[in-house]
Image (cartoon, rainbow, N blue to C red; front, side, top):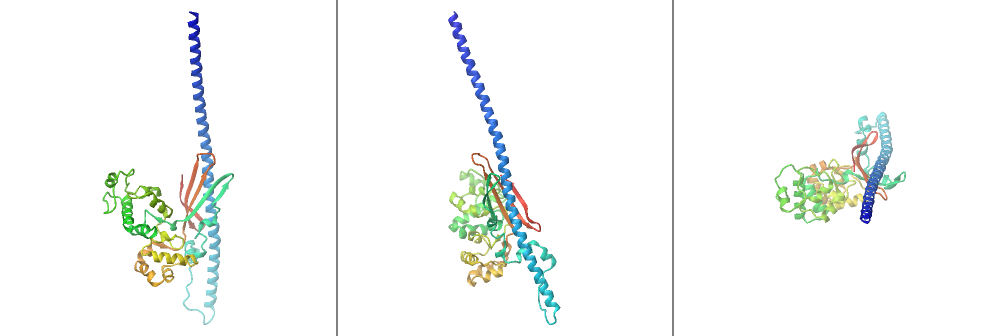
Length: 355
């Protein structure tokens, strides 16, 4: 009898040890989860702070470069004004001389739009910053881009997207047209498919994982779900796209692929202008651009000049800043994206997103 009792006590003791071990393991796991959560929260705060610091560093560099150049331009304008006044004050001197008004001289936008685009410090903004540096001991990477150097897929007309795909990326015209119409159907607000496009019914028939929302693209990555899109075409498109810009293309900073999207631009015209630009020639107007190219090459631009002028600019008025932090040994990744615009006081943030 006593043997049975002893056996029962032994089994009970073993079960008690198992229960205590399970409780201890649960407490340990909970404590570890809390420690990891706390560590991740600290890492997230550090990463976000470093990403913000990177974006502010880039903004300060843009401000410094812009204001320094603005002072030079104002000094040149003042010197020119004094020379004009001197010419008018001397007998027999004068003529048809255009004098800038005080308002024009004080306008930051006009200062840069009337100056030589080749001397604009924002023309190649990434050259103003160290792309890989540290905030304290936290490394961050920076990428700066003129918003006018990319094609805004929410604001570009159908012909612009088609030209970008066919002329800029070299897709077969029929394929470029199908993708263009599908992109237009994705972002329009109706359920009527274009001839070569697609709305919800066509996506369902194709077994697509995402249906068109009938609104503008909220992220560039949404383009990968457009009907007929393939990974290789999306990867080729992505570096040249934006959804954060005024929709105008900067002739003096946009790559050749994006230049091809401009109304009236042909492949030959884009290639010719790209060579001229590489040689250091930067136009300030459509007339200067046309004068840089053979008459036959420029004819298409001249025939579409109204639409061309509406979509083309010649200076960098806004810069997109991307500041990214990846903490070593941590799953935390933080990115700050911002758009800065010229103002009398420097580069001012007009849009920001923390990811």
